[in-house]
Length: 420
Image (cartoon, rainbow, N blue to C red):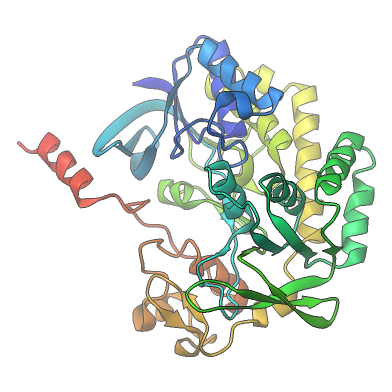
């Protein structure tokens, strides 16, 4: 039994764990990654992290925070007991309080050729580079949306890539408007300028998006709508996405209310389920600084430090983060053209090989599952579910256990442990 169980070791989860440990309580952090830091701080060596990220991880460890990496939540018996897949076996972890920091994932919208090897998510490309994949001499096209484009483009160039294009689907006006809103945060604008300086040789176009990927066995060409003109680029990699989507599956299984695809929380980061708090991108995409603040609020609240959680400075900082998230969503909302890219022959569910012609947009999500198995493959709709919600207006997939596709061997270990 621990006092607080935190799911997710990104900035939000680490911040919450530190707040709990500083108040003398026992905290355990679970994370799917091989090292703490989440997707944003994915790294091979601690020394490779930015100073503030390294300092946070070192602070957590110095306080005695226990971080279990390579651990996945597969079910929730109750808010006080989760079922965990941990390095080849299934265990149950009891807790007095639960904090969800499950983050977000990329939204990929289907287009012809998007399933070709070499076509990856924008964040996926960054993760591959950080995992050691070489891009030396590789021709790369990046087409997506939002502030993530700049650091990924800079990372690709630093890794030796020949970056041919960075395309932002939002309009020039939307991008400029968002940039103007950051005038009160000059450090953010300076960071963006530094990233742009790294990939200065590559053209950056707004109002532009990929329309098709072509190749035999691997992507060889990207067809991009560059400000109304179709341009083809010979390339080795294409990175694309239509923004981020909060990961709410565990929250749904616990019975937490979601609003507009994100976990609904109060001013203390509490969910609709008693004893469960939610923080970071699963409550809405708003960046790591806001996530860190939410983590501190939830960590304090989870151990009974209500006055600390209600501190005016924390609340104001968190509210500014929420405002930033709303501006982000408005500026980089996926344009209608992206929802119309799939042709009849385009695969929309990779796990079950379901093509666009196989589904009727007038169906419900449940009908589509029953008649085509869309969303019923190994990823359980993590990719196609969000795409179909955007394209057809279907309700989001209803999360059901087990999460994360545990292996037969892991379940077998659990059965042996619980057999009479």
